[in-house]
Amino acid sequence: MFNRPDRALLEAALGAGALSDRPHLFSDVQVLLAQTDYERIVGFVRAVSDLVACPAYEAAVAERQAMPIMPMPPGVCLAFDFHVGGDSPQLIEINTNAGGSLLVTLLERAWGRAEQADQVEVVLSTMFAEEWSTWQSGRPLQTIAIVDESPDQQYLYPEFVRWQKLFESQGVQALICAPEQLRCDEPGRLWFGEQAIDLLYNRLTDFSLGSEPCAAIHAAWQHQLAGKTQGTLVTPHPQAHALWADKRNLQWLSSVTTLQDFGLTQGEAAGIAQCVPRTIPVTAAEANTFWLTRKQWFFKPQAGFGSRAAYRGDKLTKRVFEDILRGGYVAQTFAPPPEVQVADPETGVPVSLKYDLRVYAYAGEVQLLAARLYQGQTTNFRTSGGGFAPVVVDSGTH
Image 1 (cartoon, rainbow, N blue to C red):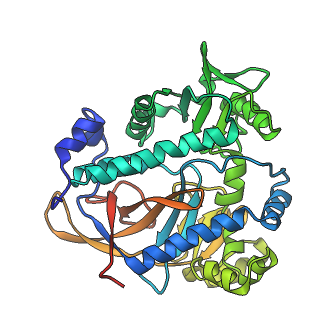
Image 2: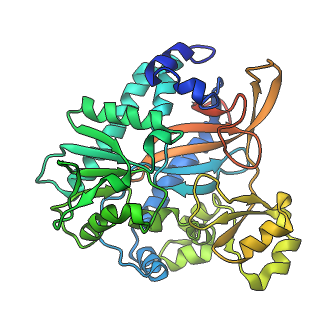
């Protein structure tokens, strides 16, 4: 184990210029997580995974989204973001196309933990194999398309390349493309030129696939939703987003009464709710109350991502508040982020950075932990000394 990550290893793995173009992608510190917090998080992930599979919960999502909930693979690359350090970990949000996992395994290598990184990468690649076999057990997985808008311009593009290499090391052909480069045939199979796609790894932030560039993917998703398995499997898919990542779900997860209405016992409901800050929809009718109490809230768009258009109440202006009142927002009780001391890489001066704890999971099991260090209101990858950091579970902390 090293005192800091091997930057030469990171440079070599990501390619020339990747880190100079992204100077705040990786932090030079490790973050400690108390064993008790880790155990609570593992239990929480399992409990919420069980909840999401409950018929009453599925029915509530179907009614709110006006869409059927069909038997479907769970969706790859799920992540739970927490703030820790208080009485219990506090869930900030759930993401269904969470990036960074293969960057974190690379970072583990740079810290001298290659064996651990190898094990996690096997788990991550197995996730895709399981997703495929759940959907189509009679057909071998041969091709994967990693899809995002202008992928080579994305900040996490180096991770796309790492996914491509990982898939190819498993004998699966992989390509990286934009959604408009695909076409869909009648059985619901997507094509990139003359190459048929078995599985589409969806990194898009158009969660409903409703935009024009996503028309072919949306058509494939409609075949998938109809239960047709001859086509391309889209994952993570709009149903996974509705079940997990719509921020209105946080209102349910933070309410013991609602959770009991879904069929949980009082103890099960309390176990989930104690880890979720109270969350409620923002309505114009309650505008005055929200404004007067704004310092206690964090305002988030219900279908937002990457902390975009999310605002701490104590930083809120009247103009932004008026935008929030137009609809589509929830207010979550502010749970302060933990902080860690970091030496500024440019000055060497110690600075205190905030961090979110990201927990990657699949089918109810935790796969990998990471921290994302930052200054400001939310994670931004623009902070000197910030970026992804590995997390070490410390049995000596409580």
